[in-house]
Image (cartoon, rainbow over all chains, first blue to last red; front, side, top):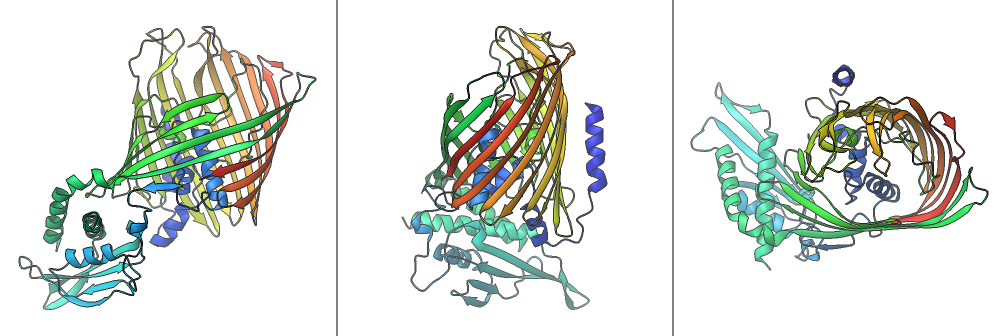
Length: 198
Length: 351
């Protein structure tokens, strides 16, 4: 067993590092073509469990990938709850972005001054904001709401921060973890708005 | 800024607990495969025709907590001809950082990361003697039990293009039967994906090991194995090859459990042209088996199969399949006459 482990560990270690300099989009596209059983099942959307019935899970996954999804496209036959219910669709005439995401974003970042908002393009851009306990740092947010459905892929938060150095504002690397946290807060606020709206 | 985020997260988490149960998403999905198989076995003068009817229905439940963790599970009603079952699935936790944890009915990480070599579609197959234990899948050495956990890293874990998993399962404590059973097992697996020009390369594999008991007695020879494979996708062409090697055991009924020390190599190619997918696969498995479990095998079994299929994507979720396979088998070192060939014509539907 130790021999097997060493062989495989050595094999992978020699390959690691080949993917430097790839952009996030390139890495995502690369994973979409990965050919292990787990990856094929994951991206196909099949509900069947690779662990308990691998033959069924793989054959259904390959059928879905080959034909572009299930009989009703990529959606399951019936859905009860959030993901595919009609109430997730645009609820306001003339507003092409999800109204719950829009309202939740405004509510969540209302402590920051807004520079511009465009409900038709789905963009909310804040002005620079400095927290009172940390006056040498300021941040602003760009929030993009991309569609009419209440789902995670329709929300993108980008933060930009600067620190004061020699009396000049200098950009610092964006904190992706904070962006994800903020997206989660907005998504959960949106979910609560939807639930409370009945 | 960070403080505001933390405050907001904490507030939402506190307020969100009550709403979780109301927001569970339930989805139904399933698959149906129906077709006809025409089998010409070498040991029979009469060809057989069989209607293959396999239907499966799945109900999934999922919910994302305010912390960003998605909790999901499902159950399915399975009817695969001779097998009709209520198949329970794992409880899966998917975290906001991309990692995931499967609890109960979890798989073996070595199997999860096995490369999926292109293979023929269809339900065609040729039966063999029950004592031919040559393996046909590269992860045949990976055992697991229902009481298991499997952890999956996020994509690009430690290095860009790398994903790893680890699994462990333990026996459920039921009374030991006369035949052997897996008492506990572990597995580790890894996938590395990279590009070379217009080609995407996937390298996957894993190692696994199990402790085996028979009538409550720990065996000296346990189940273990490894698999390694590589696949390349360039445009509409996919090629792959994988190899598996290890030890396992097979319950052959009538209180007979065989020790199997085997290896298998499989290679395949598929090509997509418009709505048509052409696939070709060859698999060669060999093993030495012994009816004294825990003792290395001495007699040779082999299973060599070549399969091909043409699949036509009729509509979203619907494909028509024509498949063919031919099989040669040896059992206990003797060229057996239970090989043959089989055709399949049918349809696969997913909803």
